[in-house]
Length: 147
Image (cartoon, rainbow, N blue to C red):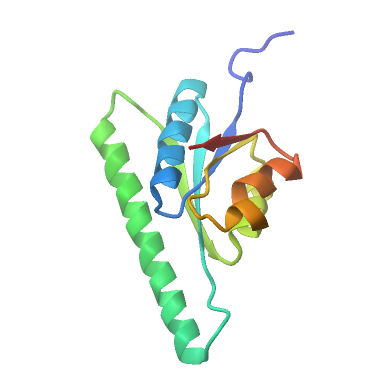
């Protein structure tokens, strides 16, 4: 039996890192969330400094926090520019770690119905595999890769 309001995704997770493709993915996911009445969970995973001493690690952590704050501000300003005519429920989540692992952790914790991610812009990912490819291969959610 059909129930009004229960059709479609309840939570859409989008991974962002500030790159052009991730911001296009965020815009695409926002459109999906608006049309479906879904919660948009914007996830930024701060890279961890693995090489160097404590000073390098602290600098990387500080840069990650600043990048997260900047991304959240950009998203908040974009949402405000849309005004009251276009209402999107959204949350910003950030953590330190591996991008793939962090997105998986957030998608699981938030019980995501879909994941949206930007295509990698790095040449080396053709060989090693990008976050997008790894998410698709995981086969745990429908994954949309935005070019």
